[in-house]
Amino acid sequence: MDRMSTLKDKLKTDLTASMKSRDEVRTRTIRMALAAVNVEEVAGKTARELSDDEIIKVLTKEAKKRREAAEAFSGAGRTEQAQAEVDEQAVLEEYLPAQLSDEELGKLVDEAVAETGAAGPQAMGQVMKVLNPKVAGRAEGGRVAQAVRARLSA
Image 1 (cartoon, rainbow, N blue to C red):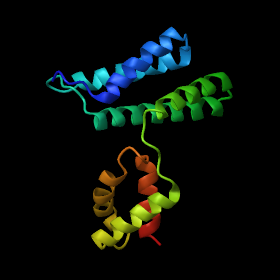
Image 2 (cartoon, helix red, strand yellow):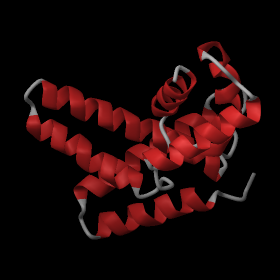
Image 3 (cartoon, rainbow, N blue to C red):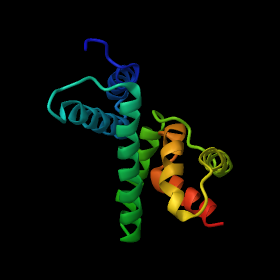
C-alpha cells in the first residue's frame, strides 16, 4: 500500500514544476487529474492505491470529457472555453499511451475476428472481449466498437 505508482509520482512532480513555472493550464489540469485519481482511489468499500493501468483509465476518461466539452463549447460558439478544454486535453494526453492509428486498430480487429472465428454483427461481444485488453488505453471504446461493427458487417 505504501508503493505509489510511478505515473502518480510523475503527476505530482510535474504539478510542482508547473506551479513553479506559473503554467496555469498545466497546474489546473494536473490538479484535476490528481483529484480524479484520488476520487477513484477512495471509491468503493475500501481505499486502495491505483496501478498505472488504472490511472491511465482515469486519465483517458478525463481526456474524453475534455474532448466532448470542447466540441460542445465550439458548437455553442464559445471558442474561448473550447480552447481551454483542448489545452487541458493536450496536457492529459502527454500522460497517456500513444493512440492507435486506424491501420493499427484495423489490424488488431482483423486478428481478433480471426482468433474468435466471429461472423456477423451478433458476434461483436466475442470480438470486443478479445480486443479490449489489446487496445486498453490506446483507443477509445466507441472507436473500437465502430471498427469491429464495420468489420463484422462487411
